[in-house]
Image 1 (cartoon, protein in one colour):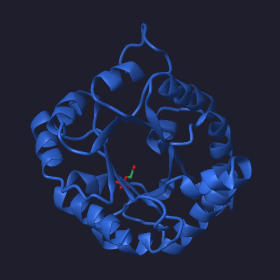
Image 2: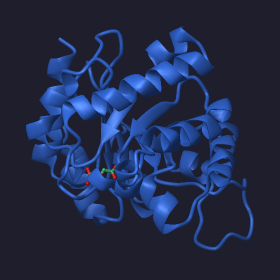
Image 3: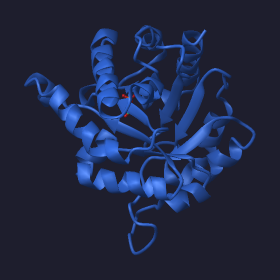
Amino acid sequence: MNPKRTPVAAGNWKMHLTQHEARELALGLHEADSVRILLFPSFTLLATVSQALENSSIEIGGQDLHPAAQGAHTGDTSGAQLRDAGCRWVLVGHSERRHHHGETDDLLVKKIQAAVRDGLKVVYCLGETAEEREVDQTLQVLDRQLLSALPYLPEDSILAYEPVWAIGTGLTATPELAEKVHAWLRNRLGEKTSPERAEATSILYGGSVKPENAASLLTMDNIDGFLVGGASLDSGKFCGIIGACADSSE
Ligand code: PGA
């Protein structure tokens, strides 16, 4: 990674953990001055984790939000409710939302607008499926996902490249393959906004990141940290990934 950017270790806890487990896991994490740590617990755990991390620099975020400010939306959560529970961030465009919940580019724009309205920063996820990669559609898909969201994404947003075939499968993109996409994304961001913004934006890699592969991914210029699912549920493994991020910034 480029030393001009602060490395980010983000844990996406998905639909895991009870209150007690979440509190223990959050309290067991070792902060590192040079690493920005973000956690994305389930809605029911947000207040507990936020309280546990009251005196810590670790920031928390929601895994999703509804575009509306409030209203009759059974099962949904608003940006204002996320803020109230201690969130500063929200994930938008995770492939499990795109593919399991049919979230479209248009809906994701509305979610980004809601996050901005409600004072939440965005981690915007994008990535191709195995089928799309096989037929050489990777860059086309990423371009569509990036350009549909870009006019609405504030400058302090983070991008997370997560090839769908690597999420939860144990198959990690090689550092070279991930770097090719990250460099392309940064270049595209520069063309569509400004070179300064492209240089300043953190682009995370996600998909079966573990302590064993974190350091080699971070040797790449355009990989600025990780969005971690499975390994973020184990404090030893997540601390190993945070440590790799800290080492990369030295
Ligand atoms: P994984 O998930 O690390 O378990 O592959 C990553 C993600 O979905 O953000």
